[in-house]
Amino acid sequence: MSVRFFDTRRRALVDFVPMTPGEVRMYTCGPTIYGLAHIGNFRTFMFEDLLRRYLKYRGFKVTQVMNITDIDDKTIKGCNAKGIPLDEYTQPFRTAFFEDLDVLGIERAEHYPSATHHIAEMVEITQKLLESGHAYKADDGSIYFRIATFPRYGALSHMNLAELKVGARVNSDEYEKDAVSDFALWKAWDPQDGTVFWDTPLGRGRPGWHVECSAMSMKYLGQTFDIHTGGVDNIFPHHENEIAQSEASTGVPFVNHWLHAEHLIVEGRRMAKSLGNFYTLRDLTGRGIPAVAVRYLLLSTHYRQQLNFTFEGLEAARNAIGRLRDFRQRLTEVTGEGAGHPDFAELITQSRTGFEDSLDDDLNASGGLGVLFEFLREANRRMDAGTVDHQDAAQALRFLDSLDSVLGVIKDQTKSDSSDAEIEQLIRDRENARATKQWARSDEIRAELAAKGVILEDTPGGTRWKRKL
Ligand code: AMP
Ligand code: ZN
Image 1 (cartoon, rainbow, N blue to C red):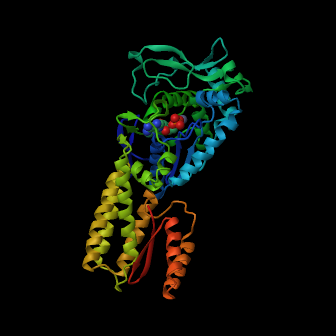
Image 2: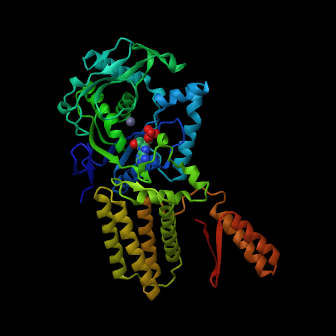
Image 3: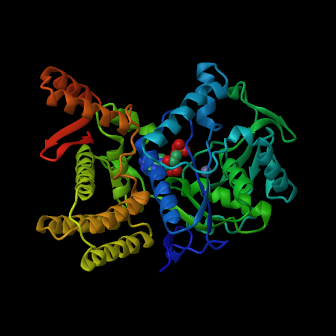
């Protein structure tokens, strides 16, 4: 069975066919670093993490590029308002973004190019478009893409150019769908830009946002590559413009598969900085919510459905992770000798197939989680009945770990101040203290462990521990 994705351009589920067998080259529009990313942004980045992890699970070698938008209307406005250089303004947000990725367990892409380091490539594309008549220079020195020269304009977002009024030019990076317009490839320096400009063969100025992604994707992935992703708000105008610039400058198709994630919404509206209805990851972890619960919540709704953000949803995610982790722990404690039961092996095989069928079907992670919980219930039932031996449990653990390479929620991946070894040493110290009836010392260690977020459970077989979720 092959992997199928819903392709925005073809408006259909299509088999994923990579250009080079066994390899995937994909581009994901990254963050604009004028502030902290909010969890709406992370919904899209989490979908891309799932996509990347599942393609790897399916044996593909993945090369993922995520750009960092450090030049656009918003970053320029921000640094000028503060009166500091652009790099100085964006740097803290860049650092915070990578910290948040780690906290959420989002795997690193292979390349994170920044727009500021790729001006030459953007100038080159713009020059080519000028030479071929796809672009023109306006009186103020800005350069625009002439959409009338690109008949396929609108094919991604399914707009019919003939039916739409073709607006004049737009200079801003983001604009609405009420009219399709020639858009800026290069913006001539304007006093409002302050110190943000580059002197280039195109004159003094800076690139428009859309051409940044064409330049950085093609530089690292080639003129044609397999997958391009983003949130649905990127479809128009951003991705439509990327296609026009790229294909008009190279003459070959730009991208084979376009995948877009639906929005995360709060009380019926898209979470957005401009609406002021957003939470950053730090807002949530600051309230004591574990990052892995945010991860689970973002993964558990199909990426093409809107995700309604609620605190109840986060609580449910936290409970689900608790159940999965308790289950894993229980499996590690199965001791019964035996050669494994064929029907247990069969249960694992069926569950694996169920999980893969779901994920193959346009990354249906909620379906995959359903299969996993079905497995949990059945395996727990058999453990209760005493029909699971050590061999079975070992196989189940391998199975869980392979699914978790995609989900990233079962094994504790949160960064902790204390390693497992340190915690286990403290537990041994506490056991020694108890053995020698040093109760005060034993309580002290228990309190120290509690402060580290470790929960102890004294059982007849010794002390069990887990990290607090
Ligand atoms: P930006 O930093 O604004 O360039 O956005 C980064 C990514 O987040 C883009 O792919 C957007 O489509 C995506 N995005 C923005 N808001 C949301 C939201 N509420 N839900 C899901 N994705 C979003
Ligand atoms: Zn982009």
